[in-house]
Length: 192
Image (cartoon, rainbow, N blue to C red; front, side, top):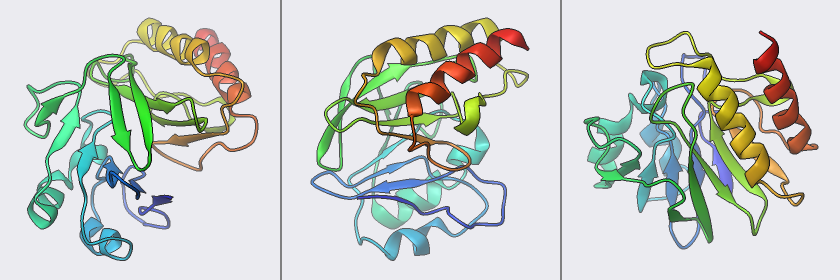
């Protein structure tokens, strides 16, 4: 089961996805809200925390999650204090009851990852793309539009026709024709 526990939070935060199952995992921790009480509505333990990237709105709650659940974090760049274990490009990761492949997708931030499970057609896209063909900003430190376009194209080339849902770092999940949103984002990023 996938729950966005930051849903309806009126604060500057990313989405925070709790995926329960054999390996109960949190995708990003968000910021500026009591993530612990939200998690405890669904589970008493977390096995792993995965970070799509290390912008503050995605990681500010890492210390409280580590403390409350005695859990370690996984991300691309272990030089960041919030990342305990490195995830390599194309490494497979247990999330819920599925195995996801990590895709290094820089452009929004150099340490950005997407997590994709082909068997169930689910992708956690962080801030790479959003609903309706929007895409992550590149005007922050480490951002690069050309690299972002390459990353969006890589995602488009990786996902299969069985893709059913993209869970984004902000805004609603993309559950209707998600490949179209990837293609729209790729076109829009090239035009601006």
